[in-house]
Amino acid sequence: MCGIVGYIGKKQAKDYLLDGLESMEYRGYDSTGIAVLDKKSINLAKVVGRVEHLRKAERENPSKGHAGIGHTRWATHGGVTKNNSHPHHDQNKEFYVIHNGIIENYQEIKAYLTKQGVKFYGDTDTEVIPNLISELYKEHGDVQKAFKAALKSLRGAYAIVMITSHDPGNIYAAKFSSPLAIGVAEDGMYIGSDAMPILPHTKQVVFLEDNEGAVVSCNSYELFHIKTDKSIKRPTELLEIEHEAAEKGDYPDFMIKEIHEVPQTIRATMLGRLRADEGIVKLGGLEEVRDQLDYIDRIVVLACGTSYYAGLVGEYLLEEISNIPVEVQQASEFRYRQEPLSRSTAVLVVSQSGETADTIAALKKIEGSGILTLGIVNAPGSTLARMTDAGVYCHAGPEKAVASTKAFVAQVTVFLLIALHLSKNYRNFDKLIAELDSLPQKIEEVFAQEEKIRKLAEKYSTANDFLYIGRRYAYPLALEGALKLKEISYIHAEGFAGGEMKHGPLALIDKNFPTFAFALSNDLDEKLVSNMQEIHARDGKIVVVVDEGKSEAAKLSEDTIVIPKVSEQLQPLIGVVPAFLFAYYAAKRLGRDIDKPRNLAKSVTVE
Ligand code: G6P
Image 1: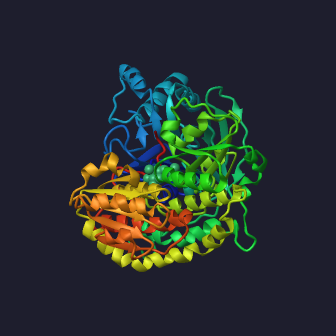
Image 2: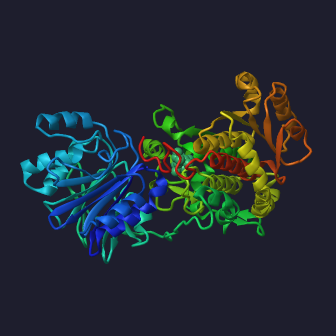
Image 3: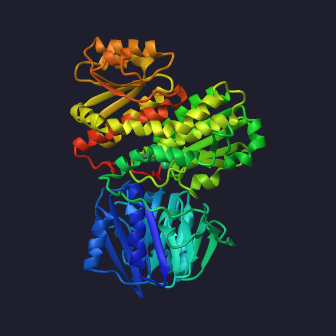
């Protein structure tokens, strides 16, 4: 979703702004723009579309200046138009602002400003901010005072960065709820809504906390509290993250590249943690809270989207292997529930980006309650990684395609490692550890069938609807498989537990409503086969993933994908790969914009 960059320093601002915006492109956006301050004039460039279009505009008409701000917008208030894209300015074109989040009381502010004679050119909530600052500037005659006064009137979530011709030596920033970081380097100050754009320039970063603002010059920054105006001293922290550039290489899309990275992702996630030869799982990130973990008798997992489905797999794993009761909730629901939590409950958030607004809000809800908070996060240094008491990083590397694939696999792998780490006397402990060690190799074998899966996906790409079914560990797989197909191909797809077929979904089945079934070996084999028989009897076509070519399930199916056999607890890690490939090739056949599907964003930073 929306991304923010800002710069003030010795270099031409536009170079960082454009590179920074590009590094955040994967988050999803529909328009982009920059404003660059040159002495007393500000040059504004905005486009509907990609950063490459903005680059082109900049090549033709370059913005000059050493301070500037840039934004990628994902429309919330107001349509996708150049007018509505950021940066936004006041009616006199003196104050330019970029903003992530939502100003909840913008209608109220807009009504007040309109009464003062302010004319608005667009439909966004953001446009009220520069106009409000401008009005307050008339009153105070001082930019800092006007900025601080305006912040006190805003309600909602925001990360704001502003430049103004009235104070060319400073950039102004503020945050509540949406993340904002300032990177401090020899050649200037680099601002970003996450560390990604900053990292190629510096690892010395200061993160703004909620209700904090900053006045940033070429070589210094001053922090203040928005409510009290008190100045805050906070040194930079050294981000121990390597800048990992993700390139498509020879792949046509990031998504297919990331699917192919699944085996190496599992290796990276397990590296140094799974000690197969010693028969242990070591998780440094949980060491500090080891004693507290001994007293935990319930885990509540909170997440959104694909991470939520990884949580559902985690539920099965933790309950079976560690014998701890687990409940998984969508963070967007949990944040508004009146749910009593005991002190012996741990809350575990799961997030690829570490910046999902609902998951952050859910975690904030229990802040200060003394409840142990844990994280399974992929993006190092992200908000959720910093907010939790302890956690285990996924080490999946940057994931660029909006639809999550390798991060899902890494999250499930981490769940498995945590479950084994917390287990006491689990009977299959040694077997699973040995099997996990060789799992990446087995997943590589699935790619030998990629061509077959491509043809199947193309054959079924004309379907309007798809049902995904599985039981036990394969049930969350059915949910994730269906999500993947609808996200990128726009084919309507739903996931169900096989046992639920008779309670509704069966009514949909006919020859035009195909089913994707996960029929991987377990002691419920016969039950899933009965579910498939019910579909077969109603002329429903079935594509099945099996781990034994000649199984009963294969006989009932029109098309079969055979994958290597593994223990049931590992099935989600390997079984999901054919579903990823199936969704990818169906979407490819339909000519979809696979890495940036319509209406979706990689990092959902607003509610
Ligand atoms: C968006 C993304 C999904 C992701 C979900 C949760 O919807 O498109 O791929 O699963 O957000 O994101 P998180 O970063 O918290 O895992």
